[in-house]
Amino acid sequence: MKKALAHNYPAQTVRKPIMLRVRLVSGLTLLGLLAGIGLFASRPAHTVGGPVPVTVANTSLAVTDADAARQAVSGALILTDSASSGTLFTIPSDKRLVMETVSITGDRFDANTYTIEVDTTQGGAFRQTFLNLLPNGAPFPALTQPLRLYGDPGTQVKVFASSDGREAKFVAVSFFGHLVNL
Image (tube, rainbow, N blue to C red; front, top):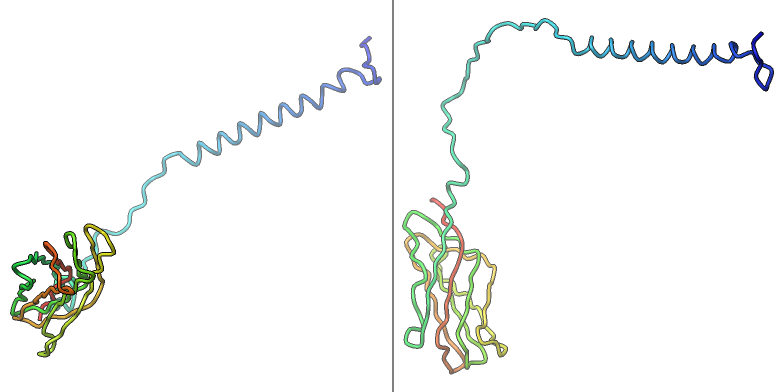
């Protein structure tokens, strides 16, 4: 006779549900494996019709680069005690100049203020722009000024430097911008 467990269930009765769970898990695992193999099994390739001819119309328009009309440009000039003015840039006759930034630096100013005048011709009219460099005790004062100055084709951008009566050893003026095709 079989020995009963502490709770008076026969041993075989307890094993049946455990064996049923083991068989169920094994069966589901096998079913999952078969489904995975079926998903990744090779299938015949589907064929779509051959190449389709395409006709392109309205090809008379030329494709151009929109940024080709803007050419980056820069220029620099050093003004010394003996030369307090000069030509910063000569604009080509088929372009318009757009100055976007002017930078100024100097060497050991004795002056309280130093004024840089940038002269351009815009629309046939003479334009003056004044930039003041204040040393504030710095040995190499500097200024970078974003702006928008235009220059007509075939003209020059002139720079003049002046102080409140005393001179600097040198003043360097540079600009950055672009040329526009006319």
